[in-house]
Length: 216
Image 1 (cartoon, rainbow, N blue to C red):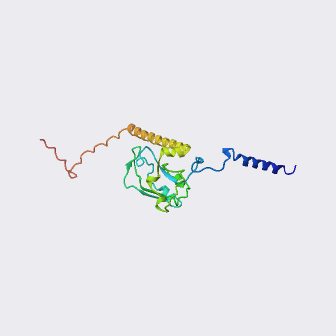
Image 2: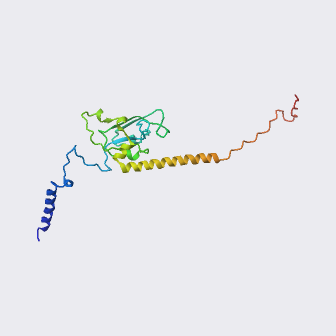
Image 3: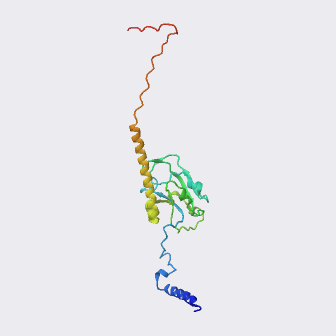
């Protein structure tokens, strides 16, 4: 029958139109901010710095290598490396960022800084409610504002954070095994014998008899 396809399409449209008033899954309007749609796992907004333990200063994973600053396309990351080292959360002396700023008014959320970081120190946040009245300083995030705990990272990206923790644990175990193997090899290596002592050189001229030893 001519027009059957049109009638079927209109029936689907009518069913969805009527259902949008009664079925919650079909509602397209969310009463924000009282209601919020859950954000997907791979949603990203602006970068944050991850720290371990409860100390945001000592537990910071960033060692100020400045790779993210060099690779950032809009050049919105600014880092000043420390002059000294301090123990990290594992007790290993590390450099740290004395200054770490990100201008989120320039950031394009490309995630390149996350991809190039070799220490899993910088990740992408999900917080999008960052509008400010001021145009400049209010959108320049300092190290204190960027620092977020690993627990917070697990809350916003649970699957990704679990994989990162697994990789860090495996790397730490491999480094510890390598250190123990080197120590065992050094302990098993035989001591090098001392070279033989050469005989004393004679002070007499050629053709002369050596001086006789004197008795005390």
